[in-house]
Structure formats: structure tokens, C-alpha cells
Length: 275
Image (tube, rainbow, N blue to C red; front, side):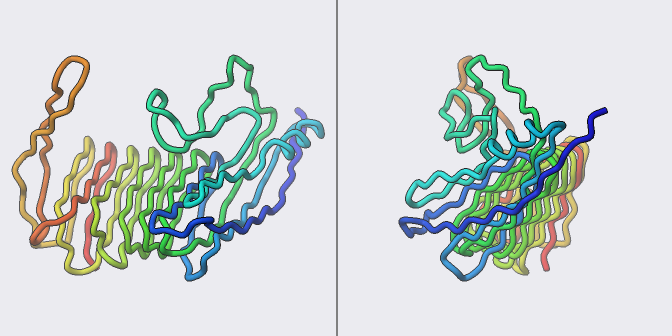
């Protein structure tokens, strides 16, 4: 068996929005590896990425070093950072393929086989008031700390941990737990989802919100006493076969109600607590 060769280095970048606005957003799309985001009081985005390339020959290793690179798209008020490589394409998907910035495997008929393994582990400091959208697929967890703007996090094989938040959150993972802790309770609708894992949400004292819960093999637990059930809601959606109807049960009101906190698992519990 040929011994794999390994190359590791550190990549740093300093970015700044060309146009400052409340809609400033950093999109960071990883493939293999972890993401750590930390909000701070500065105005620059400080990126540090540990890059590891593994291959079974010098030629393949050099190819990996040349192809697996950190890429940046500047959209004035938004910055999109992603990992370029020899096969996966990246772009803003149209309605045919989905929506948002993401990778896709449209290789135009080419035989796309990456002959090396690559991992990027990101540590990023960002202005705390911006919005962030982060994602990774394999070999890593996502953590986001001390953000005042909105946070969107997607993982496939790993956990998500969002701490000391002051804005809204949208967190989704396939295999892993979702942990959220709010420094200030959100004033916008939020969604939390995991297929195989638990959701642990810790809110500040005095939460007033509406809440929905859905699970196939899980239960809802809370230390909030002021909670009451809401009537089932009938949802209507246009489809090719007519109007699709769906009844949404397990809806609750916490204290006087407010923005929606939507929790869903397949195999896992939801724990909602106040500090």
C-alpha cells in the first residue's frame, strides 16, 4: 500500500466590505473541516484557515496544493468565501437547482475525480453586527459566538453550537446536536433542525414567543412554566396537483407570545430552557 503524503499550511486573509450597510453578510462555505466564528468590535473580517492536503504521490499532492484554494467573491455589501477545488463548482443557485450560494457537481460530463483529500479548518473574527451564513459538510463542527446580526448555519456530519447571540438564528444539521444560547432573546422568527441529534436552546429570562415542535422519535422538555397550547394551524400551498393542505400541530405560546421559534428533529429531543 502506498503511504499517503501530507502537506499542512496556514492561510490568512483580511477582508472588508466595500459598502457598509445593515445587510452586510459573510457567506463562508466549507466542504471538509470545521468553522469557528467569533464576533468582535472591529470592522474587518480576519480569516485564518489551516489547510491539509493528503495524496499518494508527489504529483497528486502538488495538484491538491494548486487546486484546493481559498476563493473570495466580492459583492459590495456581501463577501462570499469558499474552498475551490478541482471538481465541485460553486455559485448562486437558480430556482432549478435550489437557492443561495452553494457547491454543486455539474461537471459538464467530465469525469470529476479528485485525486487527493483536503481539509480546511477555519477560525474567523468578524464584526459582531454583520450577518453570517456558514456551512460545512464533513469532518467538522460549526461554532458561532457573540453575534448581534442574523446567523444561518448548516452542517451535514457534525454539530452546531451558537453562543451569546443577540439576533435571529437558523440552524440545520443532519448528524449532530444543535446548541443555541441567546444573550438577548430574538425578535425575528427562528428555525432549528436536526435529523439525528438533540436540540438544546437556552434563552434569556422572560422569553415571550410562539413555538412549534415536531419530532418522529423525540420529546419536548422545558423549564418554562408559562406555556399554553395553540390551536392547530392549516397551511395551504399551491402545487401542480392543486392546493396542498397541511395541519400543523404541537404549537405553543410562551407568556404573551411573539416571534416563532420552530423546532424539529427526527431522532432526538428538544430542550427549551430559560437562564
